[in-house]
Image (cartoon, rainbow, N blue to C red; front, side, top):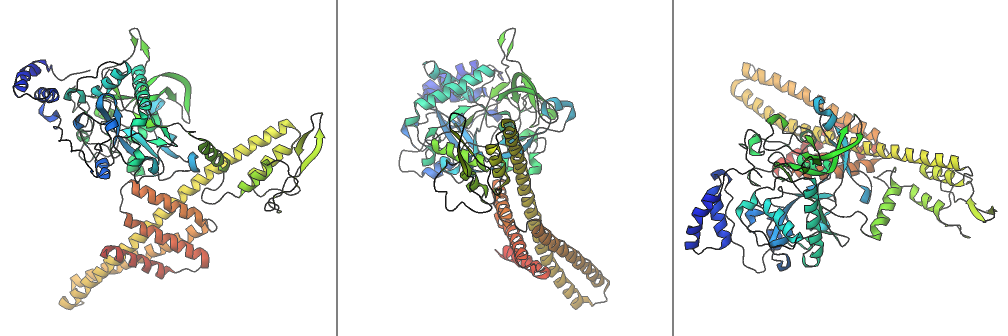
Length: 640
């Protein structure tokens, strides 16, 4: 670990002073570090801990404060595990009375799939050709382990829990001490320094040992769903465990997750309006020294120091990139984010670097490499969860915005032969396959017979044809064809959903523009009227205003025509698929909530959707009425 200076003389000078004051050992260490650290890095002194009592747990948990669970009480000063508390912080208990602070990072907006197979495809990497072999852009699926119920908060249905800060030295020492059944480390403010000199094996050992400790004490740790702090979330009763983030998870959070716009997400790094030095310790700002956690501002997802300070190890091994996929060779481990030694041009979210697992000295660990943790759970946590996954899998390739018309068909061709066929299943579009009761071979096996009429759902038809085929090779080819069609259909449904969301976004923006122009036209007409009254119609200034107003009216008419065309084209694109637009509106609303946008403006998108729906129903072009509705909505929001 790189130290800014030798703190030992300062510690010695402060010891006598602290003893004369009869202070506690913890205060002595804090006093000593305050003299040893530069002024701009001195951690704030911990606030007094509230007395036990019926405090407002929700307020405390939103502020990232412990809520009095004695079984997992936090004894460390808050400056050592959450020096920059914020709403939405979660505390995870650690050995030796410690804690780790986590942030909820949502994964909403354009998620696709059903139920437990729902995820989000995000574009990661960069277009920089000189590093394309390691960082070339790619689409990656992202999903989170936790929903709102499991966290006890108002959140999306799919969230990650990511470490708010890099793992610091005190946290590392506490977990290692518990694993070795050794005495707890001395609590001092020096423990706030991030733990450098970490390699792949040490990072995995840290997450493994902490996970074992959490499972051992799970019964004594409160459930996050109950609003306690610190807490351990559960999914189907299964407690979460600690691991390294994957390469894709790390970059998703580093870019800002769903707290930034799509354009901001694809920039080289997250927005830094006050300048890079306010968010990143790098070569120009760190002065060659590792800095304490939480000194600089967080990224939009609420995590600190994810770029710069220490490089961070991720779970995936290093692989090169080809244009459309990873290259097959697997190498060392991956570190992300750059460090205090990185130049300004190296501070980017896509930066990936390979570190060998071993060299001539043994396992490789460098002084400017550390780690950040992520909380996760198993996927198949219960029989109910497995059933939900099976159902979601069977629906892939169907329309997520509607019910799947093939559900009953698929059930019908998979159920065993029965003397009485299901009464609600027989129809020309949903035939019941007749079981051939003639024995095949000596074993008397039965094989379904080709139905008299085809199934309505093409996936079901292919499934049926594969089952009735007596040729194993043909059956295998039909099954493969079915999966190809399912995959293509799933991709088309996802693309249609994204297109519908963008149509709603564009229509809402046009409606908002019409409202703004109508309001501005009213103001300019009033100004022109006052000019006529005061100066006369022939005054040059009034004539200029009148010409400008005519131009504004023409622009208003053009935008009104564009808006009407957009209503009609959207209706023609989705004449029988209004459910797709409704689903897209819900996704758009979730996206705007995630980025903290003004939710009142969603009224424009909703109005546009209502006008599209009305046109689908009656086919009447109501250009003036549509414009007036947008203007009235704008005036309503302006007066609100």
